[in-house]
Structure formats: C-alpha cells, structure tokens
Length: 194
Image (cartoon, rainbow, N blue to C red):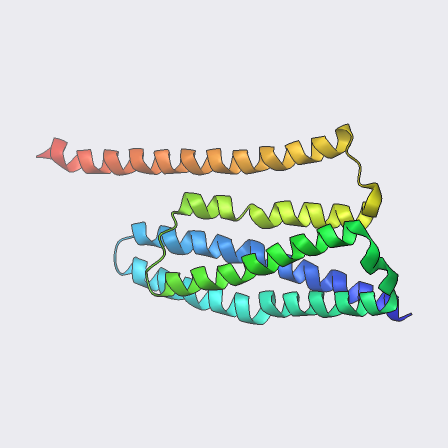
C-alpha cells in the first residue's frame, strides 16, 4: 500500500514540477520582451513578471521538485532492488540534469530582476524545450524500463520532439520579423507626412 501512495504523490509532484518549469521560462521570455515596450509599460510589466516568477518558483515549482524527490525516495525504500537496474541509473541522471536546470532557472530569475540577463527571447524559447525532452526521456524510461524501444516508434517520438522545437523557433523568428516590419512601417509614417 505504501508503494501506491508514494507513486501517486510522485506523479502529482512531477506534474506540478514540470508545469512550473514550463511556465517559468515562458515568463522569462515575456520578461525579456517587456524591454521592447515603451515606458511606463516596460517597468510595470517587468515588475509584474518578477512577482509572478518568484511566486511560481517558490510556491509551485520548488515544492513540486521536493515532493517528486521525496516520493521517489519513498518508492526506493519499498523496492530497493530497483537501484541495481540500469534504466533507473539513466533516469536518475536525467533527473539530476533537471534539478540543475531548476536551479539554473533561479539564477536566470535573479539576473532578470537585476536587469543583467543576456539571454534573448529566442534563446529562452530554445531553453524552454529542455524540460520537454527530459520529460519524454524520463517517462519513457519509467514506463519501458530496460525494454525501451529503439524501433521506428521511438525514433518517431524523437522526431516529433525535434519538429516541435524547430516549429517553435521558426514561429519566434516569424514573430520577430513581423514586429520589425511593423516598427519600420510605423517609423516611416511620420517621415512621409512631413
């Protein structure tokens, strides 16, 4: 019975954790893009995003990480033999990378608050794809364990992830070009009237 409780709350924990990570970097993107707004909108938006980032990180994302890890430890106490499995070692490696990503997001959040972040919104969009890849790998390892398929289906899933990432990047470039065209058009209007 303990295994089922640990597993249920482990799933709840990682859903909360990933939801927080996905939205946190999305807020970073908006925070960076607020620099393109005129005053006073720029300051208002940046202050609001900073509040949202702190709350999301402190109240949702970090507790989600702790619940995930605590319940994983609980799961391991009910089935210690699983520690000998190679799939779990790989999964734990990806979880460690995810924990590092989580803490790197805290670092970015502090830099954004001090206006020292050098990341562009385009780069942050690419960074936002990292937890998606880790989520897919971690879930596949948890479900298939040592029988992870390496056939056409697995490669199809991998291709789908790459396609999603490329599509998001292309959309971001299109949005940027459209914004630049609009800015150029607005800049030309006063010159033509004079």
